[in-house]
Length: 170
Length: 195
Image 1: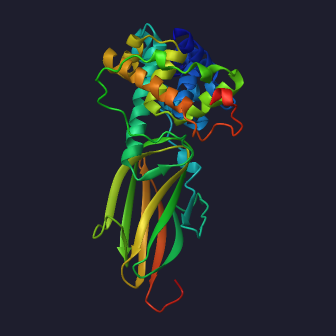
Image 2: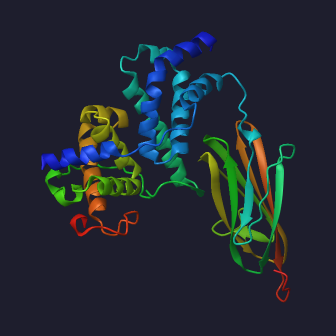
Image 3: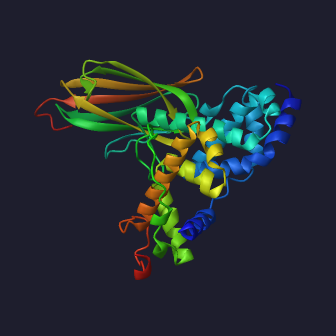
């Protein structure tokens, strides 16, 4: 069955590889040498949007403002995935993400924990971070997501309101 | 580093950029990720220019550096709650502990799957997208790029026996996916000859 293996190799070799974007070779070679000498500037393209479950709240990056805010309403004891979409102009290794959870909400699986931090890599484009938020007590709460890389920080604030029983505004 | 270093780096690496991109695309299945992977690799190599000068065969060495970066990215991705949008279909766990020998299985290839070249290309492309990244790596390096098993083992930094068993697992998995009638990317008009 060596022949079959050789046919398979032929097929594998025919698998198309899409062309990289125009100017790729020149660009990556230039970037490789220049990134060591110049400040990192990917934040110029910024962070993207924030959405909450089905109610998408899109926030555009504003260069002059490092903080964005959106709001979500929850019923008491309701659990809902709040999705943060982090847009990065390029892949980043060793980005630090910190979550600060305050007020009347908690993150499922991290009860009693008000600050969570981890390192991750971000791909170019949209990176989705889904946070399982629970409304614990009526009132206001907040989740702040802070993304830090190379000494630069961007922050997304999610204001949450947990409605009291009988409050139909949630 | 100086501009002359940048020129030297360009001369040393220019001929390897497209092949590295080709490897990266086959590993990641995504143009953006492949470009980023090559960029990260070149950035790292540039910081090691004195060493690059002394490397006799740059391409496999660069592939090894790129593979390390790729594996680091996979490990981080799987430890983190961040879900990456736009990745291709592979979702398996990172492969480790594969030292046990696996019998070569060339005889298990089903000749029927190789009859219609155009359709077969679609089937292979779809099956490839569902392969585990580590299987794509060894198959692309050995079956497509023609690296020997010793070279593949060197690039992915495992013993030759592990590389061989991983390659056989990858072939088996690809064969299974090719023969899998539930292959989600296969055209709906499958001919009986290729089922």
